[in-house]
Image (cartoon, rainbow, N blue to C red):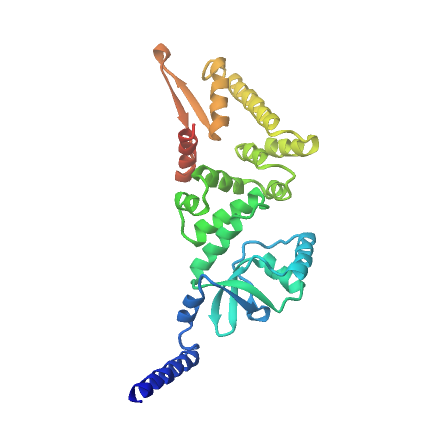
Length: 301
């Protein structure tokens, strides 16, 4: 009988322990989140607030409505990701489009992964999740890269590792942010491609840059044709400089070589000739990141 009483005592202690853990829920939120991390919980929609660091600001209304109708029929299949702020209060990390569509569909609860992260980690998670979307245009990608670098204190190399891209890809996207706002907006609207934008960003003459940009739009020029027009412009510009100086800095046959190198690396190039066929090719770069971009092009060839 004594043994049975000890067993009963253990059972009571277990029940009391369970009750105590429930009472202490407010006191130890991190331990609760750790237990929930990696699993899916149904969280009331009313307890979730949107992510103030959300990099995505525009949502296609038709696509949002279509997703909402699908969720009305099938429910939310892919869980969103949230973090716990306090008791009965959560903040969205990723999945705002799904969350908005669920609200439209009238869901009272949504399935969610609960993560234990600080503000810095949440910014990075939201930005990296955003960069993995397939419908981003090149400028949205570039802006997200820039935010990751500035807000998460990342280098081009560490950023490339986090997003699973080459350093060249990161640097090429970031260079697009040097374009004038009008051209940036055209890339956003997908009126011109990233290839067009990459060609235009290397042009220093603003008048020619905008003239060619409008020609690309009006005549629906291919990227290759755009690059050829830039090459022709550089050839004429260099020939004019040589004429104005009274003599050519290098023989004409070297002009095309210089322009091809300049176009290939997206950098101003000089060729200096010495005696006996010797000479130098000088590639100019504007920053350490620009130098790394040039080195990446060399390494990938």
